[in-house]
Length: 222
Image (tube, rainbow, N blue to C red):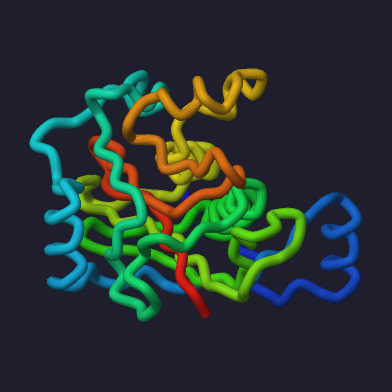
């Protein structure tokens, strides 16, 4: 008996303008061009190590990663890793809401990005720094760097929005969970809090998510 012919395969073809329009009307959001993952440099590796953000020798459970348990984290505030110029990431602040919006945009833009072990993916955004004299007005121009360093997940880490955003915001501490708390009480909260109570702002910081690597941000003067 003769073997049946295989079913014909559809050839790849470009999406038409009409198809793009239909996708957009259905809620598709086009993302900005992304930076490709690149190897973590020796200088970055040393900076991460100096900050206490080195690779751990065990894997965290899914539950531990999702809960961001204290034993699975190392937090450092205002630490320079990327080596980009500026004031080395210390003493420059961004309003919390501006940071949260930018972190959400970054995590959305890089969803599904495959970051091989030993590589990082990062992006830089123009921002307005906190105006320390009048926080109701925009401050001087600045830059915000957001980065994910895959130090532990083999063969690669695929960026997940919620995991990315939780880790990016972790160095802020937990003040946002209880906004009704008076500022004096908030100042007494845990020492890994990189949040500025006076102006509700943030100096940037890194968080080590066990089994994956370091997620973080750096704030610079422009």
